[in-house]
Each structure stands twice: as C-alpha cells, then as structure tokens.
Image 1 (cartoon, rainbow, N blue to C red):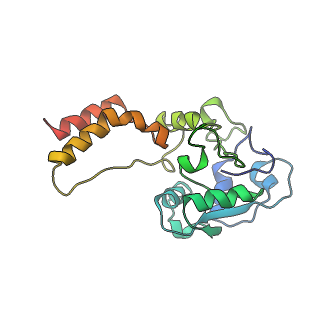
Image 2: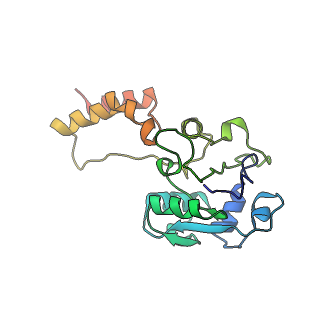
Length: 203
C-alpha cells in the first residue's frame, strides 16, 4: 500500500521484481524505476519492526525469505505501519486488509492508495488484479488470482479433539460465523471446505 505519489501506480501497479528490489535487494529505487513511469522521487520503504505473520509471508513471497531479510524503516504493528505510510507521500509498506481498507466504506483508508500487483507482468492492472476496494481484494484472494503467499491460510488447532464448548464454537465458525468473515478482512471458506471440516468434527 502507498499514498503513491499522486496515484502514480493506480493503473499499472507494480511487478514482483520491483518489490524484491525494494525490500530484499535494498536498491533504493525511484518511483520511476519501480513503476516504469516518469518520476525521480525516491521510494521510502517501510517494514514491520515486530515479529509478525504479515512480514513473514511478505518475505516468503519475495523469494522464500524470512522477515529478518526485509529492508526498510522498521515500524511497530499494523496500525503504526499504515500511519507511517499515510504520512509519507513517497512511502510504501505492506499490511493486513483491515488496516489498509476502511472498515465502514471498504475503500482504502484516507491518505493511502493500494498498489495492485501486476501478476502477469503485462504492464497494466487487469480487472482480476484490481485491489481498489476491499471487495475486489477479497475476490482476488478467494479466486486465487492474488498469490499465496502473501495471502495465507489461518488455522485453529488443538492438541486433542475439539469437545464440548470448543466444538460448539468451531461449528459456529463454520456456519453462522461465516457471515462475519469478510467484514473483518478475511476470506470466506468454500462450501466444500466447510463441509469437509464439519465432517471431521463429527456429530
């Protein structure tokens, strides 16, 4: 995500190699070098200073690396990183969906633009790659267009079989609870996945 400068990358996004050059190779690119457009302004790269899943999966996407390999100005927490990028017109960072998009409107938080990844490297953002609002982002993830990593699955695990209230809670997550998933920045499970998991829970 980034405030761009002035929407520079709204239509073309950025290629994976540009992200690698910024976060892994620390090349100190200008926005022009990162996007192929005319700009001599340097990209200000931000990363998480605290250990977190978002940074780890971003590093894995950039070449099976670890969070410790990411370069940039370290900022603590999702809200901190979003705010640092929002305040810096030349800044770029990564974040979980609900810290990049406004909870109520579904559009990017004020002062921030979302950089779409040019997955197929054709120099433009195709319809399926468009991340301009949270609904489009969720669709890109659920359809598999947005890659994993940086998208990632999350699991609830237990040392023993779920029983009693714990099993009731798991059933709620897989049934009525699914209606709260997208509004909280996550992707709904497929019906097939839900049915498979319900069978594993048993009666």
